[in-house]
Length: 61
Image 1: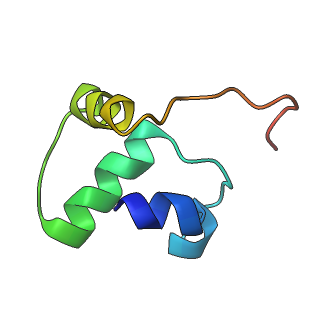
Image 2 (image 1 turned 90 degrees about the vertical axis):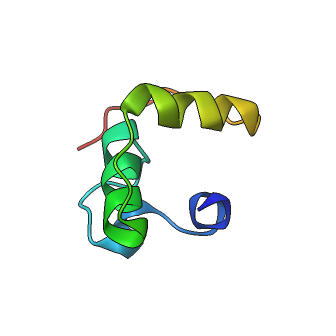
């Protein structure tokens, strides 16, 4: 999943946005691996991987 975050965008997986969001990651985990996790769990693991949420500098269409 880490490689997916670094080498692709949600558009590559059928979503209409270029930005990864917690709900998209949760859904992708469910679809790919059949696991159900809370947004907060995903956020915790992203933090442990030294990844952090960022806000775009421009409005996302």
